[in-house]
Length: 106
Image 1 (cartoon, one colour):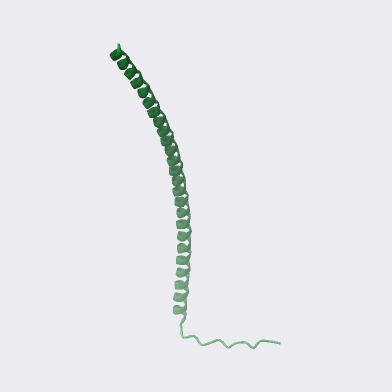
Image 2: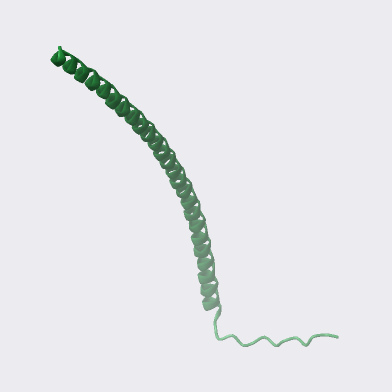
């Protein structure tokens, strides 16, 4: 079974107009390709920036964790030192008080 062939529609464009339209279509295709390429480049740069920001954030997190650990250790040391000083001062004060009491009673 054959399909009936269509009769060519009469074109209202002349040859120059068709060439101009083909030229415009070609330019639009080129522009679309350039936009597509620019979009890929932009996405690639965004991916690089995202990785860079993630790496910097991880560095900050690690730095904060290390600094926090150092501060905690420093505070523990300070607390232990203060407790030791208080104990030593209390012992010294008790010894001084004992000496004063002894010398007063003598």
